[in-house]
Length: 110
Length: 114
Image (cartoon, rainbow over all chains, first blue to last red; front, side, top):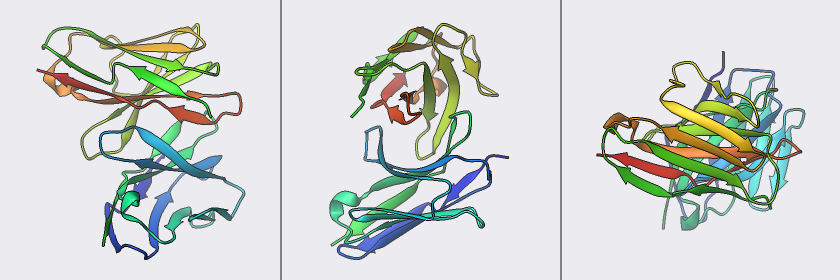
């Protein structure tokens, strides 16, 4: 079946690193994505990783993929208050259908 | 980068009326567009896949006669919520795939049915 799970809430201090985790069940996914949703806005694509990669770094963002355990993580270095939002992971199926996780609310406090 | 727009961004309507939401890919052609629905504090749920020039493919549990999808051109897909009721109030988001199969999301449309 198709199921993507995330923890619901994460709170970090400004300047610390945040790690948001995601697990998925379908091993046939092609791409895995991280999206950011700020209050009242649509999704913004942050980064993505092809399913045959282990790691991708993009400025403050680092994506790690453990395909054996079907585990995906997003690390945000030097987290800022502007990073407070809901983060969704999603897997892309061969049909291009996107399966989203439940979203993790990241709260950054000073 | 590629831009997808939605119109309107927010609509309030009376129960029983129909509402049309437009999704446009502004600078690329999209043979496939997707319509999602987001309930408060929940993840996005795929409603249907909209293919240009053909009938949409609906996900299980989504009423095709209630959520009418038309994909008349390579840059426009519309979602019409017919005979809307308060339980249809939600945030509707579309996405469009480019030639590299990268998906771009619209800003969403907030529907409130009174």
